[in-house]
Length: 250
Image 1 (cartoon, rainbow, N blue to C red):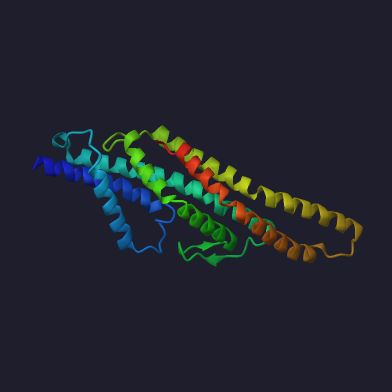
Image 2: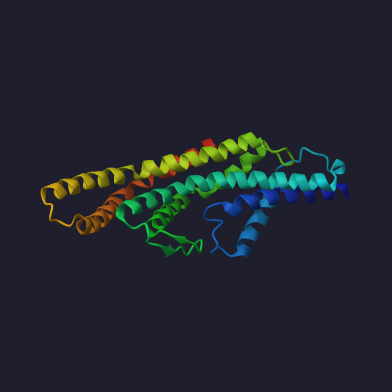
């Protein structure tokens, strides 16, 4: 009986961490994926990982309140790991929004069919392309490796190391800004050159309506730069995997 209780508690703790991780994880956390598939995936992974890890606690000495606290700890670990992965993945969409504002498309919104949220079309397109490249490079195996390594650093039933988790999430936020600006840097340089050219034209030809001239030029330049940039987005897949390996509190 005690063995069954120990196995059940261990399974619930593993299931809680995996469920919290996949709840906010890109791709697997999309609303378009049926809930039954998400639940089945979480249960299968929980069954697998619960058979290979060991609880560092004695179930016979755990009260109900302590069990609830342990489950809360597992949810905290899973959410922290998932937030780091989300922040790193959001850098692609963030760079797309920077480009859209330079193109004058800040007010353009579409309904994202994957998340059922309002989003900008260019940022959503870049995110989809990046995720396709990430999955084609077996990037989903990285998520399984993250879960596996998390139990080496934070065994099931351990007390959360809040400073370590917080530093990982804050570092992921910094990478979000740095990576987004780095990916959008060539486009920003091109738009800066365009603005200088338009400023010179405004001085040379004062009667020219620079506003109406600049709008199609900015849109055309943005689409051209994005077309040139797309072949190089695959090079960021390896860098993003490396960043996640450094930022995750493992």
